Amino acid sequence: MLTLHFDFENLSDRQAFYRALMQQSACPVDFGNNLDALWDWLTGGMALPATFYLAHADDASVSAEFAPVLALLEEAQQQLEGELRLVRGE
Image 1 (cartoon, one colour):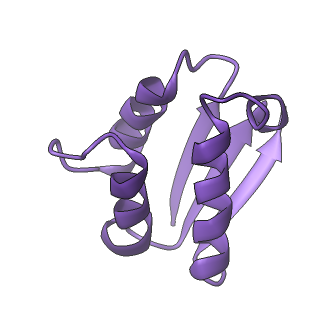
Image 2: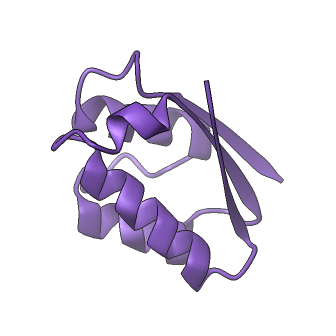
C-alpha cells in the first residue's frame, strides 16, 4: 500500500503540493501540475490502495490555495470506494 504524507502548514502553495505528490507517488515527470492532472493521476495512474495523511488540512481547507485540492481529494476518495483513504490530523 502506498502511503503519502502532506503537511499543509509546510506547503507554500499548490505547486509545492504537486512536487510532494510527485516525490512520494512515483508520478511521471510530465505530470501537469493542475487539478485535472491530479484527478487523472489519482483515478487512473497512481498505484492503489493508497493512504494520504493530511496534517493541518482543516486550516488549509479554507484557503483559496488548497481548498480545491482538498475537495478533489475528497471526491476521489468517494469515487475510488475505499482504494484511497484520507486521514486528517495535526
